[in-house]
Length: 139
Image 1 (cartoon, helix red, strand yellow):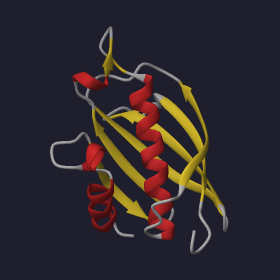
Image 2 (spheres, rainbow, N blue to C red; image 1 turned 60 degrees about the vertical axis):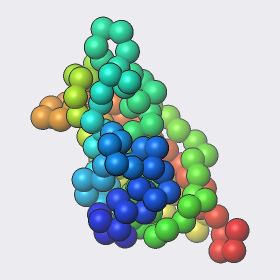
Image 3 (cartoon, rainbow, N blue to C red; image 1 turned 45 degrees about the vertical axis):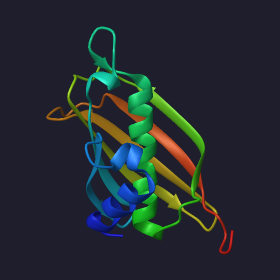
Image 4 (cartoon, one colour; image 1 turned 90 degrees about the horizontal axis):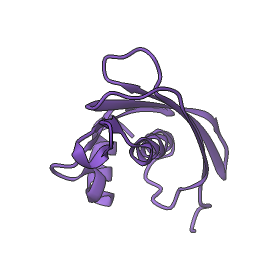
């Protein structure tokens, strides 16, 4: 799927995250990779003004899903089966970028690595690895 196709698909399937006025946007997508932006607003912050762990986890999971769909096309029932994240440093409020890359794409499982950074920062604020289950044809 192209970047525009993926964005349009996610707007239709997940309007709560990608619809008009929502915080997530596909910046780039290609074969087995995706770059997703979160415009972190007040609802994404925890006390002390940092982007919350749940917001970062959601962004990482969305980026992995986008990278997988970029590789396999529209498969709405591809679901997370495992998720691990390491929080490395405090992200600054504002945009967070998640760069996802497929490590392995099999017939039934996909493993993806996701790097998260505050926009304009070279250092990671978090690193995640996810495994997705891919339904068999006709599932």
